[in-house]
Image (cartoon, rainbow, N blue to C red; front, top):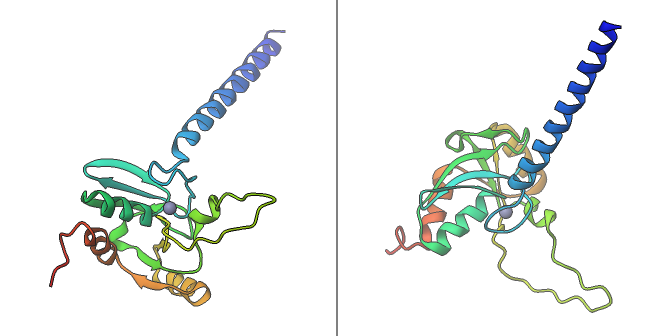
Length: 173
Ligand SMILES: [Zn+2]
């Protein structure tokens, strides 16, 4: 009888812990899911952790952070980027970036809002997540991605230069 009670007790505890874990996952997941700048859901393969003007943010992609830095003139430091292949956060200094490929996970996550019953209006314009820039820890994988989806191979210094451009710190012949 006593063992039986123990088993029931343990079972109840496991259920309670699973519930807590589930609730924690939902709460933390929801908080981490939206990019503070684009408002888009954060895709695990494209996300970045950055410092902009000394504040830390998790963004939907590196591009969104670069644009934010350019728009505000604040300095950008890219702390971590997701490896496109594994979704793990890696050191951007060792990453190989593929820029301007045909793939854009941010725009795929939140496509333009449709207006059913109305004619579509195609606006070719600015999107803060475009052109896309994905990170790869493995140069060969980055090159294989380019072979399949197009784009150009970049390093961290290239992206940092882009971030500084419109802030007016780098340019001027
Ligand atoms: Zn984005």
